[in-house]
View 1: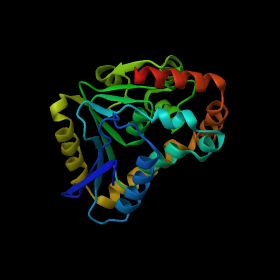
View 2: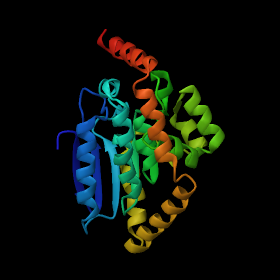
View 3: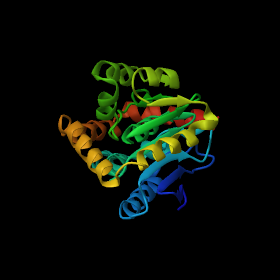
Length: 251
């Protein structure tokens, strides 16, 4: 794999986002590798918990690769490229934990939210700045945020594009615990071991039942997100805003 690394020990699989120099921006190659890796891990008998983290202690992921988003069209939005990958985390048969340090913006917040639990370092920052680029969260972000923090707070964060710190994220229920940065992965593994001590099948069925119950109320949100993004991907304001963002990065 070029964008992900995997290690397995004591039935805990740890996947690291690994695009050095790109702030782990989620591109099509990373999405493809996520699909292949999760398909493989879901079939293994030596996995009880999956942890998702970053090889860069300064950044979980800055979000989707804007260079790719800028050129995506309606058909790409309707195919739900990132949405389908993150849905695999939701549906992964065993519990998943996001171990987050640094920025987790846009698709980064969506990836963390698609995991069952979130351990954040004190440096962690979450937010959905998509509207500032002329698009909306469309990888499950709107429904996931509503489930975790409630309707009113989700609207506030998405409409404003505000980035919040770890303490605020804990206060609104977006993360489960906040620890010093150098304890993020060890804390996530401690939580994983606590889960692992229980009956594997019992935990697996509990996850399936809770996920099904939570999803039922928002069963049409995937389609709504894709349709919204399909309209926006070819909108002139989106193209202009993303071009301005990419131009700023060059300077």
